Image 1 (cartoon, one colour):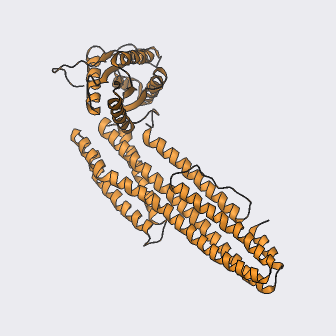
Image 2 (cartoon, rainbow, N blue to C red; image 1 turned 45 degrees about the vertical axis):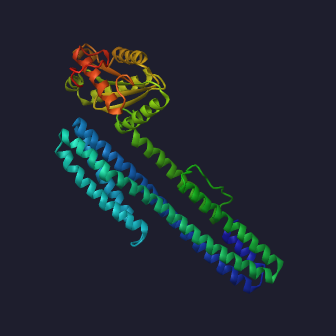
Image 3 (cartoon, rainbow, N blue to C red; image 1 turned 30 degrees about the horizontal axis):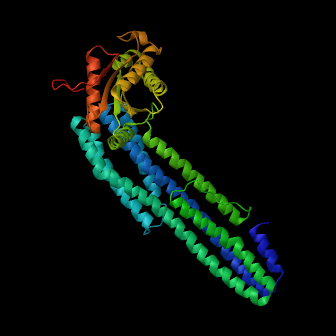
Amino acid sequence: MSLRTRILLYSVLFFAVLAIVQGINYLAFQRMGDQLSGGLKRTAQATITAEQLDADLVHYDSAALRYLITGEQPWLDETQTVRARVLNRLTNLRHAQPSGTAAHDLAVRIDSLTKRYFASTEPLLYARNPATVRRFLGVYNEQLVPLVNQSHTLSQTYRETLYGTIQASINESRRRTNYGILVLSIIAPLAALWGVMLHFGLSRPLTELLVGVRQIASGNLGLRLPVTGNDEVGQLAQAFNRMATEVQQERHKLIEQAVTDEKTKLFNFRYFTNLLRDELARAKRFGHPLSLIMLDVDNFKHYNDTNGHLLGDEVLIGVARLLRTAGRETDVVARYGGEEFAVVLPETDKPHAITVAERLRRAIEMEPFPNGEKQPLGRVSISLGVSTFPFDAEFPQDLIDTADSALYQAKETGRNRVVFYVPDPQQKPG
């Protein structure tokens, strides 16, 4: 039985005055439920859009950085696609709340900061040179990090707006419920019973909804409300559960997109740099060794020129797959840029790292890639450089540089081989 039918049925049992009083209460609750449901839907959509905006900004930064490093046109095209998507999301966010509200003013401020960020980065993309990478990273620290923080604040603002709407509705429902209980208790014991049923049928589910919103706002995206019926309150609980599921799915998708290379499905460059920093700090704290393997595909430009970029992409995807399957479960594989990859080996000394690197090299060498026999070495192969903390370097960038230097030596001495770093003041950097 729906909430409307129950209220009408109970009202018939009492005097005409009682029916009028409770009818007014019912209409108020109905209007409150409609307003709450509409506000919940609008705020949920705006919250999802703000989360997507956050991921798109990170995506734009990653694609732009890849283009500056590799010079590959698809990355530049990707920045333009993401830029258009970001501007469209900002337009939606500006219209999600009335002018003069905190959410609207914050969306306008984020729109201004975003356009300023794009105006700062786009000239660097079209004037690509070694110096622009450093300038781009400077813009990242100065503009993108504050911008992403503002985006997080906008998401929190929408959640607080939702919380305020529900809190006001609950206060109103409590006021009207208490009034109804008072009238009914004067008329008859049945009236008091009706008020109690009204209280537990409406105020308690709304209180549960408020608690659920608080939990969602605090990060507990797995929370779901119990659905006790198919009336208006039950439908509101169902709408809340659908919103929570959508937000949870979008959050998982955005997190995965933020740390994954789109082509190879490996971890991306930014995730690699953060992981290497954290693992190196852990190795220092516990006195464990840490090794790094830098590798790239031999004569990859020759393969692309001979077979086309589509087959070249298949080679990169195949190499990524073999690096994952041939390595150890504890190793972390990432795409460093272009045809270059990196493997972080926690708690691994140099001899064991060389063993792992040799196993990776053999796995690629034995794979029958299409037209591999047309390569200068007669097959698709990789060259690998190995460096180990604390013997070769103590800081993340130094560990990368020494592994890259060993990779350079592997290239210079014939390719398709593993070379470990040996300190040499005369050695040319890789």
